[in-house]
Image (cartoon, rainbow, N blue to C red; front, side, top):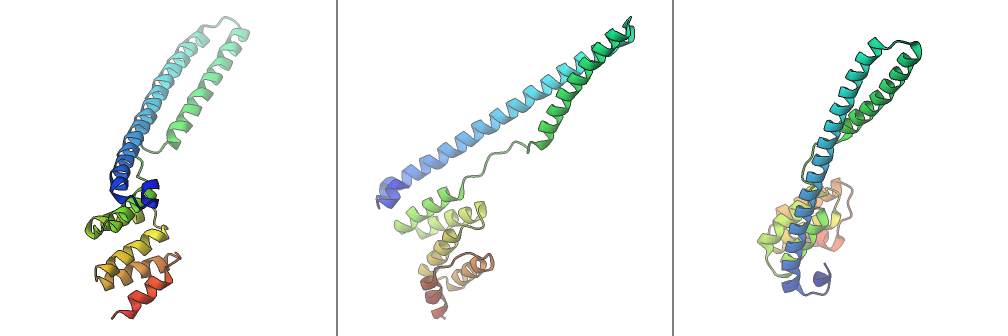
Length: 181
């Protein structure tokens, strides 16, 4: 982004591409770690259940009420641990690769736009909007791209979508797009 803001677009393009790759790699590592943590919890839960099963057999053979009470208290403690694991597992979303943040695609699109690579910039803005449907700047830049390419109906449609979502629209762009018929 620094190179983009410095208008060093030839350096900015490979840098944003490396940043996107690094994000995807990091997201993959994070997903793997989350999966491994879930696997460890499942193993821990099985171990706790095995302990409970053993204690239940011991409970039936306990000679005194004091022994039965101690065993029952321990079983209750282990069951609470299992319940905690179950709640944690239930609250976990399925492990999936985290989506690339919208700003990456937005900056990538801006770099390509500045390099006059309009056809390459378009999918970047579309990705930014998909990642964050409230990203008004991405809507404005996509509409501007369409306007520059002479695709007026598409530019109007994008601005209408932005307006319907309550997003701020570049008024100069809107006037230019609506003035063209």
